[in-house]
Length: 140
Image (cartoon, rainbow, N blue to C red; front, side, top):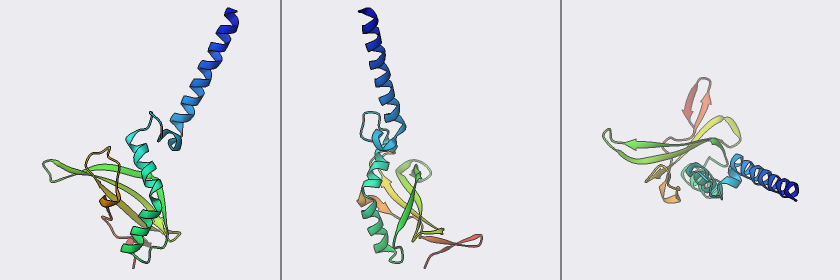
């Protein structure tokens, strides 16, 4: 009886361990669990609102038809006046119009480094660019 109980306990513990490892290693799943980091939640919001973001970019730059975001470039950094941090900037880089020689950045102003972005905070700190040899030129 004790062997059977020990075997069942071991199997249950291993099952919980496997589920925890899979959850922690997959950001898509992790973003909706208690293990979610601020970055996971921010990335989930960005992916959920990707179409809205692209529509906004197209309204500002009509020649930008499609955007291919590189989600691994998600960065959050402080923005300050030299004395104090005023806000935080969340940025993601990608390419557009299925052209690997292009570069586009989308930015969001955040109150805190772990805040979730909103469409009210959307901006582009740099215009879309295209590589011409070793030089990045503004895409027109």
